[in-house]
Image (cartoon, rainbow, N blue to C red; front, side):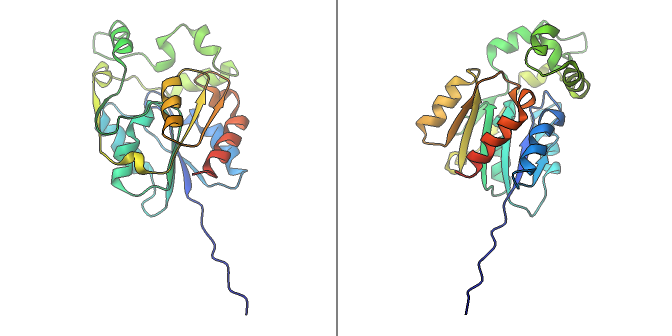
Length: 229
């Protein structure tokens, strides 16, 4: 008699955009990763405070399915809080900030926070993230003008107070199954920390928004890292 082979269901790959951007930043990669046989979901992380970001993110997540988180940029700082709310199959950080082992994590580095104070209007609101720099600089990170237009349309106007906030980091998140994908050297220290911790890692040449410039390469790299965690 032949023993039936157990079918292991893959977790849902759940993309977390930076709260400064919208879901469109991950959609091209999510579409391509589905061709590798993965179920995907892009969460909406936009909110005006850390608490609201977490609430909106958790509202986007299914209750009973096993998830792998794939955060980009400063969405990485929210991973420990999400992991504390329910078990995860793993996390692949993509050109993302890494939280400390525990305690509090500033949501924006001090030097950038100082620069942003000059951009806030009389109501304390910042322009959308793509407008923090000259348009031609942001355009160089993207494949075409239409992509930049979509980013600008989705990016929220965040209060300056958000950049002065911290997020709580529950201890123990580093015991999960973790991997890191970097683009260029924007997050070189974080990538080095991941390598030193023994995580599976990969690196692709490109800018911080390489997930929009070459979604095929990013999806292929993610598929490889997902197989290793």
